[in-house]
Length: 141
Length: 83
Image (cartoon, rainbow over all chains, first blue to last red; front, side, top):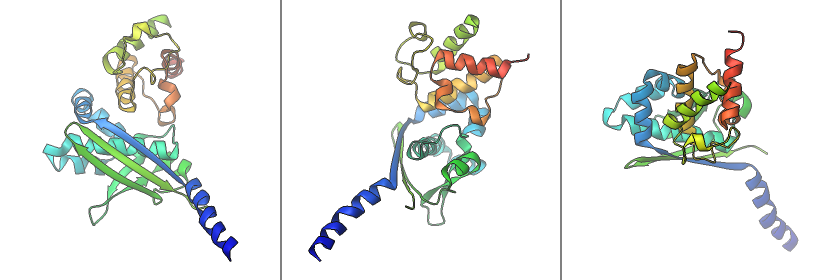
């Protein structure tokens, strides 16, 4: 019983850690605004989905910060899942009915991750000229 | 080819947000180590598309495609092959 208790304390830690990965990214909001100014719709269409663009445009005062937080989330997903060679718009930040954000994966990103994004948790933040995102990915053993 | 490298360096100078002038970087120098962020690499990609009249397909949106002047040059060569 005592041995079993020790095993129970040790084993799950290793198992749990091997199924969790994390990604983080920090973006300069004014740099994203500059990209929009310089490249316009080309930049928006290559990086963001129509839903993300519509959400950002819904609040002109927060347009660049919303885009920046989403860009950071996309990069954080790429880091957490070690995705390479996927379109930026195939990683989408979605908003749930309660206002919380999640990740939806499409196309090649979904294929490579073997997931539609359901196993991903995301947290976004922005203040002054910085936007940040953290993504935690969990996989079934 | 070297003309392409100069055009690539000009784009990196304007859009790469590098910590040093691209002319001081070797053809194989790691641009990410030189300060290029993932966001800056998107700007570089869009500027390259305008400069060389090409479009990077999704499968070429890889970190190693944009990691050096030589790597970018190879990608441009591939995208303009047969013209």
